[in-house]
Amino acid sequence: MKNVVILISGRGSNLQALLKENLGCAIRAVISSRMDAAGLNHARAQGIPVAIVANRDHPDRESFDAALAAEIDHHDPDFVVLAGFMRILTEKFVMRYQGRLVNIHPSLLPAYPGMHTHARALADGVKIHGCTVHFVTPDLDHGPIIIQAAVPVLESDTEHSLAERVLREEHRIYPQAVRWLCSGKVRLGMDGRVINEGGVTLGTSLISPALEVA
Ligand code: GAR
Image 1 (cartoon, helix red, strand yellow):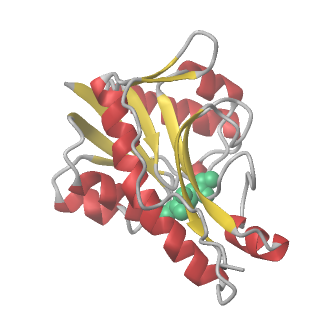
Image 2: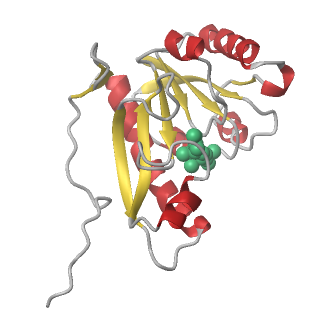
Image 3: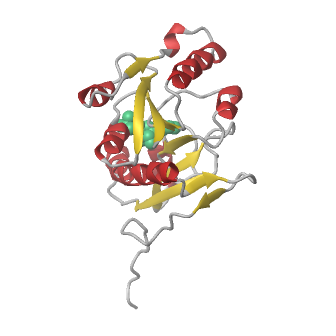
């Protein structure tokens, strides 16, 4: 069975969604970049070892990433899963876990990398938004895509209502992506593209608006 370490920084709703599912792997530890991350309680409630590697305790990204890698390696994971981990990682760190490091991002990448994705989508007036699970590469929020889910953007949406709709999809697709990884159905090919033998069938989250009949 594969070993997984999950990294968080805050609320931990994606962590909670992952912990609820049978992922076919052993979650060896949850590591937080913040001591006060609420998500740590979800791990503690299930008896999963937790560790804090606080960015505040480190003068620069290099020393933070070195401490983080040391803590991760202590648990000997096959995969490192970023679940609301809000630190930008150095190239050295990312390359150390190449093909084994995945992230969930609240937009349909490559649209809206970075922060405030829902506000930016609303400001642009896009009609479709969503979330993406991808392999992490040194290019922030641009790694090879494993799975995405789309949601409609409604006239009445606020940043909060749109975030909630996207988050429901995050909680569906992240467990699927981690299950695929741990079963070996998904991997990063030598050419940097995702190989997916898991197959995707059409589900309710694909958006295709009905047209008005003339
Ligand atoms: C999630 O929406 C996740 O996609 C996002 O932070 C939120 C964490 O929520 N991640 C990023 O923006 C990473 N760039 P959670 O702590 O409840 O899972």
